[in-house]
Length: 376
Image 1 (cartoon, rainbow, N blue to C red):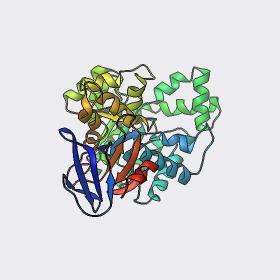
Image 2 (image 1 turned 90 degrees about the horizontal axis):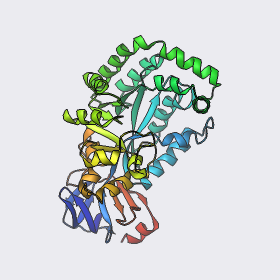
Image 3 (image 1 turned 90 degrees about the vertical axis):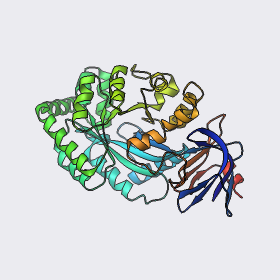
Image 4 (image 1 turned 120 degrees about the vertical axis):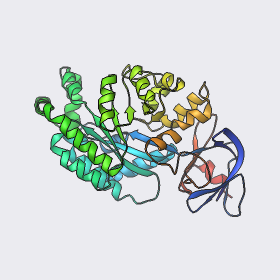
């Protein structure tokens, strides 16, 4: 298959050229070949998006608090959403917490089993284990799944203290209890029991980190609030700083050549919904090096286009959602358009950012009616 007459994003920027795809990879850039062709005139041809942290799949599993749907249905719908938004590699950020319900060990196991049954077609869906530090009862399971090759990225989360603080507010307490399908009093007691084991957390984190290192997995720390926190997790081998709560934390991480991850919704909405650091400002200054969907898949392409229209320029802005996250995850076969790399591409309208087609490993995985009309 060849993609012809499009504006192709190469290392130096957009160029009017053709791409030839063979056997799942980019066979050539700048030459043609016989066979099926896609007329990309007027479109941008960009590397497929690599999402290191997306948890919007939770809304397909539990669209309303306490209302669950079958896992196979939820994951199929999630896969369709990913492809429709140009995401060709997705790390599902699955929180493995002490909480029952949506973020429980049972849900963790169901998602892993469900992903295993999807097959190889469509978006390359992988597992990002968000390990809740006080979930000590599930440590053996997490270590075993890492060793078995069922996990692609590990991050360390410490949400328990914040949950305990928020339980003082009735509306927040109801949200957490509903998600876990428990009464508020029972949920509070469970949270207190989990936090009471705080002294056991350092050894458990070190054990999981050792398992991840043995498996060759990238590691991240989540919501680092201070430089000391970032340094602590760096010592465990976590070279990704995910959602730093203050810019000085991100600056310190970049000073150690680490990936700094921020959320695309932050860029699209013009700021953090929690009042934390501005992702757009940090990206423009080179502090943020990776953007992720966080909780909203459509924000990925849009955030790169917003930044691309500003001082970042398109090539650097798109690298935040493609080449940089691929490199941070150790996926050196994707994230750029070059001969020999995977044929993961997204073709979109430059004015609106609407995705016309998504190709995964050289195959059409998503295409609009306009896209089908361009095949010949």
